[in-house]
Length: 200
Ligand code: URA
Figure 1 (cartoon, helix red, strand yellow):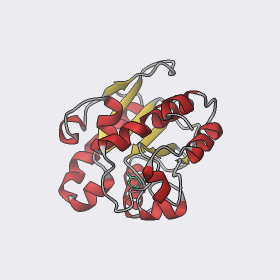
Figure 2 (cartoon, rainbow, N blue to C red):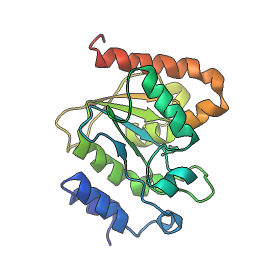
Figure 3 (cartoon, rainbow, N blue to C red):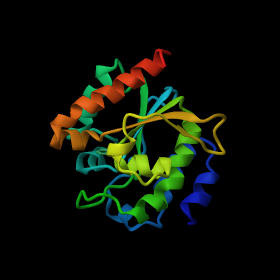
């Protein structure tokens, strides 16, 4: 047992963190979920992508972004020459809300120590945050995603050697509902590509 903050702080590597999350029992969401959706992709990658919470397909497969939004995420990454071998992918909340609702502020708060420890253990050079849930949770800002996207932020944490560059952008699920917003998301991804290439 124990709070997520206490449990996460003890984890020295990703395997320990995964195990601790799988054993965590202080969140009702965990009891209805089939899987603890930990991560996918390359843990040694310079780029870490963070979404909101698993959906049904993610819960079934135990992997993030493998449903409809995931297909779009793959295309978004491919548009700037990236794939699951060159990024690492996780979520703010690792358990599926049964009804596919947004996780509540409390659920996000309970899970936050897990994702912040996750970021420390991966130690990426760049974070892409998909959607308002990830952006507000990790940047600690109250503006919505419309105000946050397309701007560079620094993410700092005591367990990281240096601040990490952060680009918040629209969530692929939002883009599926609002295709007109793909124009902005495309610009955000281009900014990421330029930064990887050292042009900004
Ligand atoms: N949406 C998310 O935010 N994460 C997933 O893993 C799948 C859909």
